[in-house]
Image 1 (tube, rainbow, N blue to C red):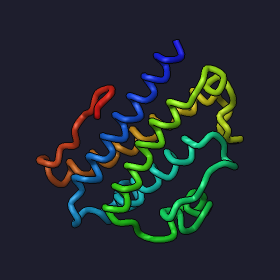
Image 2 (tube, rainbow, N blue to C red):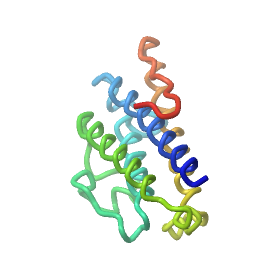
Image 3 (cartoon, one colour):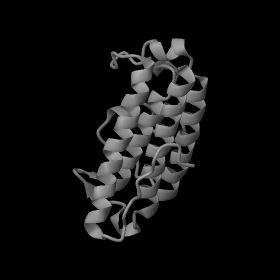
Amino acid sequence: MIDLVKQVLANQFEASLCMMNDCVVKCPPAHWDGKVAKYPFWQVAYHTLCFVDLYLTVRHEAFVFRDLHPGGWSEFDDEHPSRRFEQDELMRYLSICRQKAADTVAAETAETLAGPSGFEWLKFTRAETHVYNIRHIQHHTGQLGAYLRRFDEAINPKWVGSGWK
């Protein structure tokens, strides 16, 4: 059963991150700073990826900052990031997160998935943390896709099914 659970998680991480990638790739430069709710398109994408990266880490204390986190924890805690991020930077970050998702899920065991989330503010199992993380990706990907379609019906972010490569 553990192999099935891991395959489902891996497939859904890959599908949701592919859908997000499609939104980032299809965002015209003129809309990169456009408001999705109250935040610029790029900031919604950046926020999503920061938390994907964080929640794929085994525990809060083990998280390693990247060059894409110049403000350290303030990138996560403050309302606005330390700087504006460009499309190519976020596409690179997406690629990093896709690989981290595949590697992280592959390393899980029945014991680790049944154990704590690794984040004191997430009071559920590691398995549920992965589902929570996927829901977070899809929530913001839906926002990004709806934003893009408002400006141009030809920009139609694609639906990606399970196991898309």
